Length: 263
Image 1 (tube, rainbow, N blue to C red):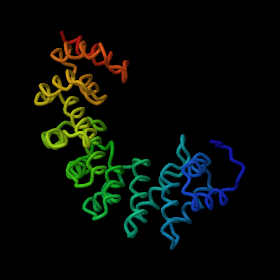
Image 2 (cartoon, rainbow, N blue to C red):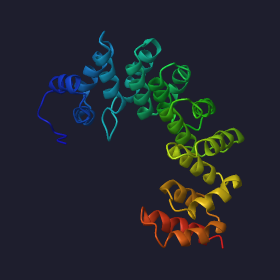
Image 3 (cartoon, rainbow, N blue to C red):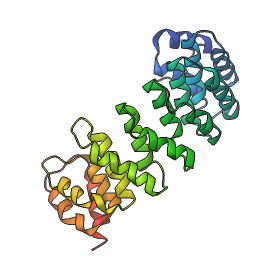
Image 4 (cartoon, rainbow, N blue to C red):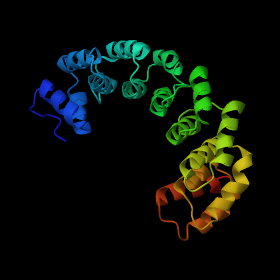
């Protein structure tokens, strides 16, 4: 990608509107100057939902890697969130607020936690990731049992791996995913729950984790869970796994070292 693209901001915006080209939006993010901010702000005030969506997409990561206009972008996005009806735009606002990661976005986002559109609920989940905040966590707990796969998956990931908070409510939410998602099609959710419970040293998963490490198919998340659990009872299974598992040797070695240290 040519970050120093010679095309004007308006040319890039017109191209992004026509093609939904993420590379073009990335160039605008990197450019991140007053002109881009002004153009994105104008888009957010458009009567055209596609233009409002693009405006939110631009403001969410404006100035990467060194953010520009974060407070102004936050104000515009929250104001738009409170009156927006289009589901695609709402999804983009939630994702943009997640990138900005400002706790002032928590309260406006959680008002949409029961929105009928899964894409909007996904935006809410993404917007609430990494907050050690009671309201954000309780919303992720609710959405970790959502009927939509992606909403459940990301909410489980958020609870399991993206925060340090350890409560009974978090453990129970993760345990429900651990016992209810153990199927091939839902393995990622199951695995994220497994990692989250291992991180919190929840002994209820230990027997199942050993069985999985000794099985014919071992996913990366199971080894990551072993690394997090750091229990010597996992060491023999990990050493047996080492004889054939080649997915991520560095991860496996870390898991072995963590469990060996406990012997």
